[in-house]
Image 1 (cartoon, helix red, strand yellow):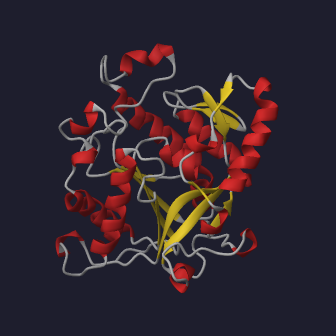
Image 2 (image 1 turned 180 degrees about the vertical axis):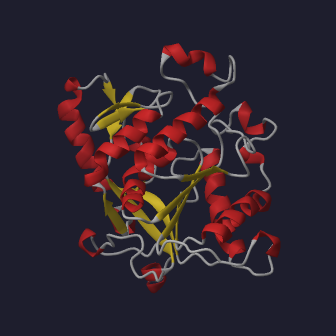
Length: 307
């Protein structure tokens, strides 16, 4: 087997831009430290709303050329983060963006929401067995905010972790591999509240007319659920640049940004996670691995992991 770096991190996301918003600082930090950071994006994001008027022709109701354009944005974002291994699940365009829950694109041919779960997971198993990550990052069962592709990405990632460890499943995809630790993206509610308080005071100095609400932020939870925080302050500029590369989807005005709804929200440079499998998560009574307070959180996703 070829040599691999001692630390290997796999992230599974639904659309281009999700990775930079949720994990940009984390990805830049570990890439800079020499870890192998692998990103798998499940769709091209074809159903996204386009912010710049000059690019409005890319929208699905017009030329429907947004997907390839967003793939280019993703490549540019990865250059900003120093990540060289980024892939689309099953290859570019294998699964199409399903749109928001309850909309017609949910049932469009090839939509990720209608994918056979084990088939989608098998594509990811091949990546897991090749890269052999010790750490996996993805969404919670609700996908953070109920988007069908985020939910499906969670399902594919969790199922792939199980199947990849089973030597009897598809040996043609490589030798079995068990991922040591699995995390879900989170934001502690007190952190979100404090950030929105600062935003309220600074809103008139931003290009945005209104602020989002805490309920608009995916993955906000009680702070006791959060097990891990990664200080990405040193990589704030890289994260902002990566988000700015997704120009069809994000307008950045550090330390704030807005999506197509033009509602300002905080750009977090410390990123938070819930350890749900492996390590200290298995010491408690629930898969949440909840802890008493912020002072007891991990500060390294690879804490306790052997090379």
